[in-house]
Image (cartoon, rainbow, N blue to C red; front, side, top):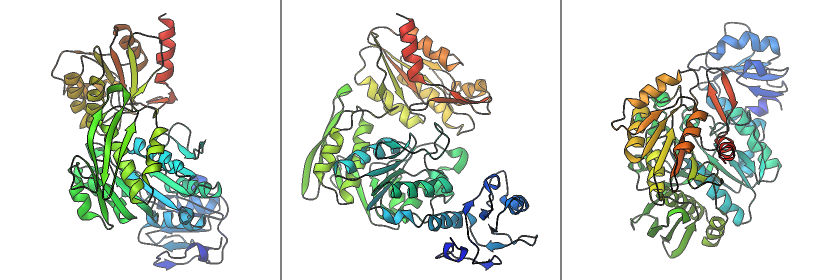
Length: 486
C-alpha cells in the first residue's frame, strides 16, 4: 500500500518521507523490521523508541513515525501521538477490518470480563452469527483458536499490531460479530485507538493494576475511555464507579442492576441455587423473561445480566439470550470443578483480586458440605497493595488457607508471601512456597465434603518465575495426584 493511502484520515505535523513509497508492514519493534517497513518510535517506561531509529533504517525501514524530529537525515512523519498513529496506520494497512462487523461489543471492568464475553459469544451465535472473540483465555473465530501471540500467554487485549491483524483475520474468515475484553492498559496506551464499538459494557471496578495506574481515579478514567468509542454503553448501576463512568461517557448509557427498577435492565426474584447455578427474571421496558445459567454465584447473576443487557441494547431478542444461556454450562477456570474420583471437591478459579476472592468463597460457602480450603498466591511485579487485603479475606472467610506462589516473575516468592502474611489476623493458615507441593498438601488434608479452592491461575497452564515461563497446569496436577492417592 502506498504511504499516501496509508495516511488517509491521520493527522500529521510534518512529512519528509516519499508518499509514493510502497509499505510492506508497520511495527513498533525494531527487531521486526524488514525492507519496506514503517517504524513507529514509541516512548515507554524503560525505552525510547527514537533511540532505535538508526537500527530500523539499517534494517530496511523506509520511514519512521515519531513525535521528535530526528537528528539524522532519515525519512520521517512527525505526529503528536505516535501510539495513536500506530493504531490508525495498522487499521488502514488492514483496510479497516472493524467496518466489516455487524455488531461489536467491548467489555471492560476489573472482574467478570471473560465470563461476560463468553456468554455474549453464545448469545450472538444463538442468533445465527459467526463470532470473533478476543479475551484473556483465548482468541477465537467461531470454535477455531487463532492466537496471534505466544500461546498460553495472551494479553487480555492484544497490542496494536496483533489486534488489527487479528481483526483482519476474523473478517477474512467470515466473522460478522466481534466480542472482546478491553483492558485498562489497552485503553490508557491507545492500543486500539480508532476502533469503534456498537456497544461498550462496564462490569465493575475494584482494586487492581494500581502498579500501572498508580491511583484509583486514573484506573477509573482509563476504563471510562471505552465509552468515547461506542454507539451505546451498558453499565452496572450497582457499582459505585458507574456514576463517574456515566459522567465521563460520550455515548448514551443504559444501566443494569439487581433489584433496582430504576435501571433499564433489572434482575428480579433472583434465586441462587447453590451448585446448580442461578435464576432470575429480567425486566426491561415492555419485556420480562426468565434467565437461567448453570454456573453458581451472585457474580454469575451480574455477568449474565451484563451479557443480556448488551445483547438487548444492540437489538437482539430474548429468544437468542435464552438459547445462548442454555449452551453456557462451564467457563474454564471460573468456578471450574475438576473431575476426579474423591470424596472432596477441587474447584479452580481465576480470582486474583480481593473482590473476586470474596465472591468466589461466598459462592462456594453456599453449597460446601464441609470445610473450605483456600490456596492462593499473588503475582509478582504487580499491584502490591492488594496482597495483605487478600490474605485477610482468605483467612477470615475460609476454614483453612495455604499461602503459596503465583507467577512470581522477577520478585522473590518469599517476599510476595510476606506481603500477604502482613494482612492475616487469624491462625488458620500455612505457607508452602512451591505451588505443586501446596496443591498436594491441600488434597492430603481434605476430608469428605470439603471443597478445595485453587485461586489465581484459573485457565492458565503456565507458571512465570525468575527462571522464565514453564508449563504448569493445575488441572493436570490435581488429576495426576488423585490417581497417585488411590
